[in-house]
Length: 556
Image (cartoon, rainbow, N blue to C red; front, side, top):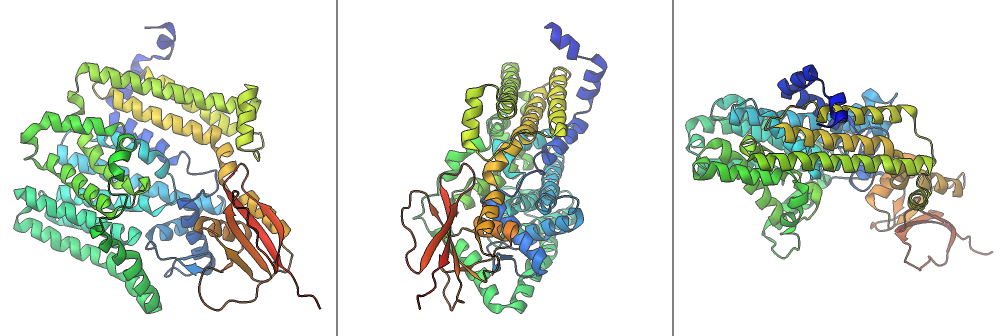
């Protein structure tokens, strides 16, 4: 072994770390969850409009009808907004409101990891159930999405609860029914009536393939699940109906029933989307999931611990594919059964495959960590100069100056990872530990070193400030045309600007100002009676353009 390795290796530390994989998994999970939650503004598209709903909920005090920039926003039920608003109330100040609200995502991700571990422990009855958590944590598709303020993370927690309930049901029917019902309720109140069908299909699939689920005991589980889920499913819709039957009708028939009917619409283009996205989205868990299926063989297909993740994956994949809504964030539920499958036979991998995964994980983490430091040197110290000029061209609004605590934390994370690399003894589980630790370290470095630079190009704060300066002090109402949901949300948050949208039907007030959003390739300009007084964009954004117009007064 090279001399530097001897300097970083400590036999007592190596023995302690290797003998406590559960504690090590807990530490990695906590760092993974917390990294990137704080220190940046809401980013478009999903997080910006989700936070816009949270902000308006706190401003208006209306916890029944979610709204975005003054208009009802019912595409998703309000559980994610409820919890984010509560965290905002608890932790802002001292934190900025958007950072405080984003802490709710950390809580939901903690529940995702907890119930994934509990499901693996229930199914596999071994000391290696923690591998499922590291497999899930290390998936490429979860890294960014798992740190955003979005309802899909809450849905993921609900599905994890539901899978645990299904796994627990044959052995302990009442608790299994409770957690299945909780999972259905959380999924419904976070995403609507469509997504819980995934859990229902998984339950029906288990009834079809396993005699353990064709019993009177599982019938009791189903009844308990229905009773537990009922309050989650009914209370908010009933409150919405009592507030406004028209809004309830829109939520039920347009935002939910239309999606369910879309399952039989085979003319959409997104039916095969998840086949193409899974190779990177579920990497590196999916090869190990396939290996587990190979090792278990036909005998494994008769056992509940293999049947449940397979049935869940098929149910989730089938529903998402039939829906034809091709977006990577919607594929998050697929990671749960893949992570469970990947943990079954990981320890039985051939030594050559384990060594290849071990070195691949170390090299990938080393390359990306070095890249993060290299880019940081260019951003903060102009070394090398050519790269620095390129990065400044990408984010012209960025100002140098990293906080010393950020730099110290990044150095600490790098050193801890290097020490960990040399202090996890050679076991079959070592590669998955170091992959998860490497992914977490790289994410920490990106959040600490490159986060402010990335935030400069993604935030709308500077653009909204410039727009406000161009507006007269007393302007009254403002029209808008072409503004997207994230943009309307950020205008509301950063500038307290709520517009009257010209796209909506109905009678409108007589406004003297107009804000438009279009593309920089669009050469058209609003004609009379509108006069252009300002145009701008986010720093480095060559796509979105915002314009402010003033209505010309008629000549006497």
